[in-house]
Image 1: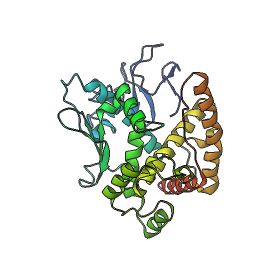
Image 2: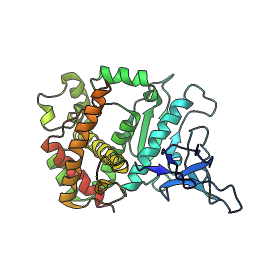
Image 3: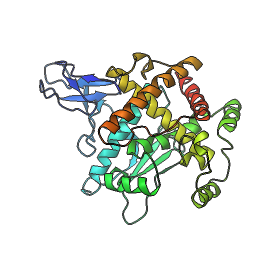
Amino acid sequence: MRDFTCPQCGQQLAFENTLCLNCGSTLGFSLAERTLVVLSNGPEPARYVQCANQYVAQCNWLVPKGGNTLCESCCLTRTRPADGDDKWLPAFARAEAAKRRLVLELTELGLPLVDRDTDPEHGLTFDLLASGTERVITGYEDGVITLDLAEGDDAHREKLRVELAEPYRTVLGHFRHEIGHFYFQALIVTDTDRSRFRELFGDPDLDYQEALDRHYAEGTPPGWEDDYVSAYATMHPGEDWAETFAHYLHIRDTLDTAAAFGFAPSGATLDRPQNGRGDFDRIIDLWLPLAWSLNMLNRSMGHPDLYPFVLADPVLAKMRFIHELCVAQY
């Protein structure tokens, strides 16, 4: 995530800002320009208007005047709570805020975002559902990412994190994991890609339910840390891919933010393609000391490690494959 400033006065701003408190300008984010834009209040005709979800989703993104009413992120949501649902709308807004960060990162990486209108069967869409009368399972199927909005509640999410012995659990993390399944379908398209996937991750066609039952009955195998980025990644090759893909997104975005604020060299920013073997090595060379320092900062504040993961060589080989597939999209 890059650093933002007010175009009117230069005041430093956050990605989520809708108002500059220094000069009073009304602001919105333009994905096309990848920056915050001042909405015109003067004689110059306005190029943009605010997304129709400005209030219901607390969305600060803009749409071209006379075009779609929903921004590029909001239009990907197929199902959400009703406008009058006071119980779940705050959680919906938190989920949409995380999704906007995801959409920007995918755009910066040049990854294709094929929506449901373009591909009615497998295009990307989100069902943001509220746990209530029926159980909601966060997951992915044929382009549909489902999120239980209860994940936006800190207490609920932390309870599940502890019960499942997970070192990390966030709404953005869920989105990054589930989008990994989408990009398995979008990026693994040739026989060579599929063969390489099998070498690194295993057979993607293994029975998923059997793998799931075995994972929860037997737990993770001893020494899993030597080959997998997380315990959940051991469950099935498809989950190993999605977990590794999510960590690739974690690393790229965090490095991008660190570079924007002077904590890392600018060479690892998302808007600059990192092509080739040497460039992936550079990303990891920058990431490892940054992750260590961030963990130490968290400990100084009495918090758990920010990035409590070990990237073993087999994990890096898998991540390198993902990197190569991503940069091929430029």
